[in-house]
Image 1 (tube, rainbow, N blue to C red):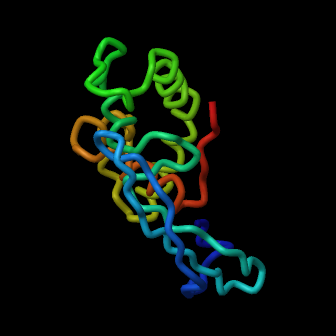
Image 2 (image 1 turned 45 degrees about the vertical axis):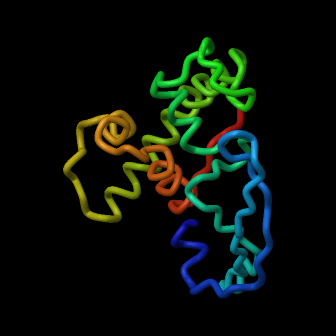
Image 3 (image 1 turned 180 degrees about the vertical axis):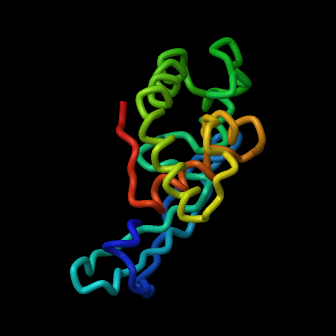
Length: 152
């Protein structure tokens, strides 16, 4: 969330559960915390997704990151819940379509943290190589800075 429009404390409004398919196809219930923005100009409800979820995506962040890192290929059919060839292709296209947006949001977050250490480097690639759970970390930087990723 942008610090310009959401600078006041958010208070808990309500909680609800949502299901997600876990390993082996079993249903896992997740608690999704919802908060109401205390800023007079906003006052909207915001859902705080856990790191394992990616907004508007069917698969969790661990599986999407494994696809993007090349750890899961179309021929890997360990179970019926793995993505098909077309979904794998769309995930790569999604990452490339959002590359500049992601870099910009990450640079903004780094500048707010006053961390110029990655000034000339591609932040997304550096994060992918140095962090096991890189996708949740990048998504957190994007969405917490008020940015968003386009669906493909």
